[in-house]
View 1 (cartoon, rainbow, N blue to C red):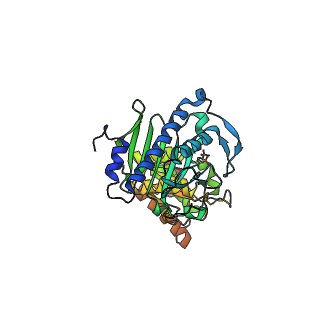
View 2 (cartoon, helix red, strand yellow):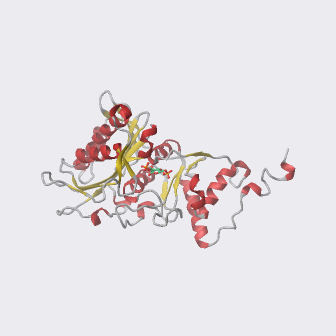
Length: 359
Ligand code: AFP
């Protein structure tokens, strides 16, 4: 692979050699990439394109739709519906799966996507992204919702585009996780980050700490230990980040390691987590595992979760292998009742708050 000269098309031809349906899958990923270029140009124009602000209604998630949510959803559908490659599509923005119009042939893939993740950030100019997942559909009949409910292990491809200072596409077809940067002058994605590998250890965690009162105790235990820094259990200082755009958090973790947590919490009993399994957690987990990281609900690998609904939410803890394994151990110890009574390390024998420690 020649960095700086390998285009997405060339890369896919080389990566997909010997994979069943290689040419159709490559063609589909090129169509997805084309949609992300359209979305990139819209997010880059911002207010100048009249793309900011709300549409004025809510989506199936009960969240207010941004104009860019709808435009990005439309870009993904228009780019991928005509090529005879997909049997159907499912989107965060659509209550039901999208049926391919009769005028177009159906193919053997299901495309599932969040057209604009982090869209609450669009009006404040923070990086957002498109997340996509590709599953197979080997039936002649048009897919029904149940055909989409496959575990994450069944994905044949997954990726995201991140619309940041640079627009990048990060994807996997099951042979590692690779990053491409959009060269706007030639309108092509160029391979710039082949074979991404997440460091096994990290000193950086990402979680929305305003939800701390809703967390389960294993999460409390982990975060409190990180906050205690070198005076506490972990004996080293940690850093925290929270961008409120999952794609941006995950991209940082793929680039330099870290842990991202949107865990199960008691904020809303109807929602075991905030993130959606089919078009956020599963594709991202595929990328993370292919880059040597771990992705878990806290109690099981995310890619092994059997979906129950198209818009199902799920707890997500992912990133650097050794830290995620520690957090999972804390969950298992909690469930087994073997975790020692949790005391804040700020007041233990090594704390800074001992009388003689006061200077
Ligand atoms: P939006 O797409 O509604 O902005 O939600 C983004 C997201 O699903 C994910 O990208 C973030 O990590 C998470 O929500 C942020 O959630 P909080 O707003 O609760 O921090």
